[in-house]
Image (cartoon, rainbow, N blue to C red; front, side):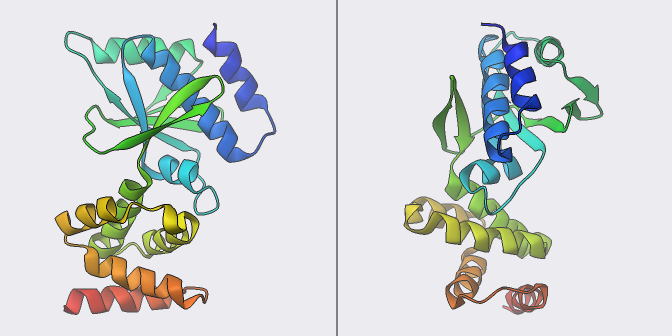
Amino acid sequence: MDLRPMLDEVLASETEHVRRLAKSAAIISEALRREGLEATVVGGSAIELHAPDAYATSDLDLVVTQRFGIDWNEVQLRVFRSLGFEKNARHWVRDDLWVEVPSTSLSDPYVTILSDPFPVRIVAKEVVLADRIVGFKYWGVTAYGVQAIAMLSAFGSELNEGMLSAHLQREQAVDAYIALRRLKDAGAPVTEEQLARELEALRRR
């Protein structure tokens, strides 16, 4: 099965953004799989695949686990160019899709979904949520707080609270989670000013 025409069709389609992202990720993952490698969607692109109403991005972040004896630089050159991508600094770019491989090692749990006709691995929703909460607390990015609240609303009772708690405890960010969940449960729109005040309160503790 030739993957390049499949990606051509996906990128030219008028389907909703999250479906285009999922299918693009699945096709790229399949191309890497044929080289004996496994890719997992992480970062903002994982947020969109888990909760499309919370976040949208044209960046596709993949962790690609390597196997011994493979020349990763040679393989990625062959794979991405065969799919029509061009290298631009740390990204592989085609049309409005920007692909980055930030790491070749993944210890976090993931889920596998089928984006017809190929499977695609996505880091667990609890991981991307925890990462945004940690980024909100320690980097002071209020947009991460907004995204975390949107994810909490989207995920609802589907969250594995044990997995999320373990990640947050490891990063000492349970207090930020409690603060953001309190804002979410209030039910009112959350402002940048409110998030800035929460950050200030977290820093005083």
